Length: 183
Image 1 (cartoon, helix red, strand yellow):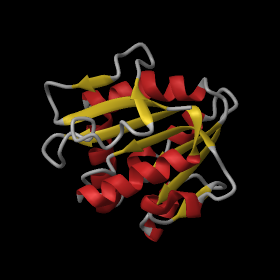
Image 2: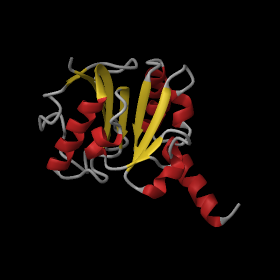
Image 3: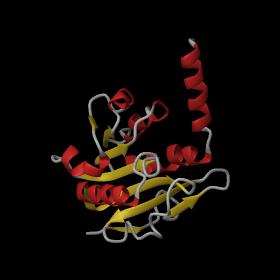
Image 4: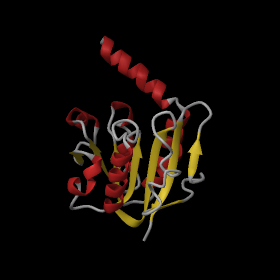
């Protein structure tokens, strides 16, 4: 194994051991898979490549997107589109999703408040009424999007996958917020 491959494998293993990633793989991905519809995973990196297979285990169709064309290699092999999530309705004019997982995007590229508003509006446009949105963000990167009122127009916080609408962790700054698209 080359040096770069070894470093990637080590980093990937460390990421998968984090409590937020364990919750993602053990609770959220199976719950999204049970929706059995079209699911969108936003933000593609090598360490989440196996997530798409997990989402499809119960008959769902996973889609991926990332703004970086180089990240397409980490996306779904047949269903990946490259572009800005702030323009999701232009990326996916032909689809309306049952569920969207937007993990590590707000604060890691979609940083400014106006960008976040555009992204959330765009996600609302491609999510079915009653559809599920999971946003993963970090308290040290951005202001709380719920407290800032960015989601209240189109989304309601709701329990999901055996957890409350918001999950925080002692060990990391990551937060998960689960919301349902207003009808």
